[in-house]
Length: 274
Length: 263
Image (cartoon, rainbow over all chains, first blue to last red; front, side, top):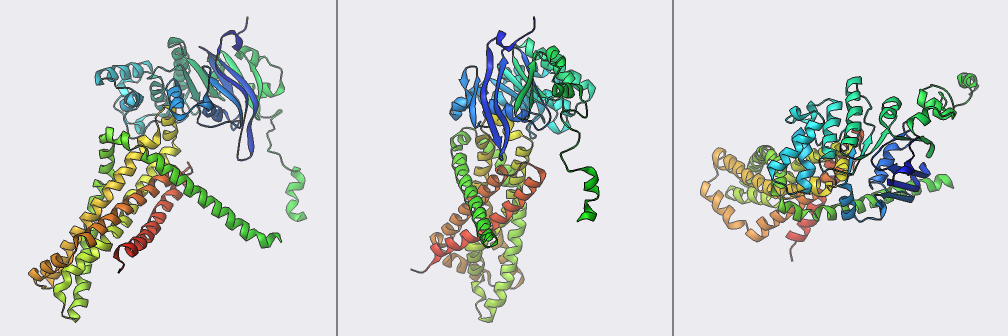
């Protein structure tokens, strides 16, 4: 039996979401459900607004129409204080890591604790070291963000994202630009943290193989629409030409290799004609 | 018809853009001011920023103040000695510094040294998603990052202006009394007798407080409002210094007219 998002109650449910920026429609009435306790992948070509979707879920952007409910709460109806209360229960991993460059690794991970709790220093130390241990960087606690590799910075950011024990984590392109080893580390970490801590994960990515290897459910987005959905196995066997092209990484297909242009021969001769 | 209307259209568009930006800047500063209680509860955030905005500007301000004071001493001596009034050199140097040059030159230097750094730092934090990341950690970046920098600038600038004036007077004294032979007692007594506390010093302090707030406001707003790319940050940094200079000189005219007008 294959997994369906309706099998478990959705933690995030998106209904009729439309969003446009600078006159360009990014999303056109899309519906999505992110099941609780699972890893859901949202895949699509670059520029389809995957990051925008995470910002809509996190309440950093407002949709033109439609609703985003997180744990039953309509995100865009909240006041700033309530929104911040909700965000303490969501972690987000930015593509760059978004570490605070003037703080050490240790202080970066301690940052949410210092801002939101009044825990004694000894407790903060224990929590920070536990989270750094979980991402394998306890030994790097005194380094500054500038001294970290891209993969390490993302792991520190991941430790920071889980330090308040959130109910869900949103990963924005976690695998982009990683070497095979650190890619493997991140894939393993996302999987282990999700199941070890009972989180719900949303992974936005266009790294098909890595994402499909850990995802329980996959949504494919293109041109503002959900064009495919299913378990990774179902999506891999889809006979839609677009999904085939995307999943197999073919250079030409429904998405053309060439940007739309006029006829090649007449374009080359165009200078003379003018 | 269209070509006739085009310039008006562009003018209207740029006016709308400017008015919108002005509106954003005012909403922004109100938001920053609501961060004051949080800062008073965590004074170390303010102190760290006062160090980088204020303390690190001290050397620049002292050296500039010394040279400006020395030049005032020289120029003042040449003019005053024509009228046999070189004893008034002290009051001339002190009045120029306390009323005008102290606040204005310090504010211009402060905009170049600290204001540009603030804009670049905040703009880069925005470009590297640090501000956005903070929002997602349920921390308000305006209160946590911007407010300490704004208040640090607004507090540091008057102190730096005072330092500039003091060093400037010493520079004028060194040139006038030390090198050109103006009578020491006359230099001091004329200065003490003719510099009025309310008229000169308080007004000078008011100016420096206003300039400090305006320059830091422009610096943090330009950083926060920057287009989050390398080019956007570089443009914002330039705008920060240019707008600060205009604002300081414009405010100086208005304040001077209000303060020193004859009844």
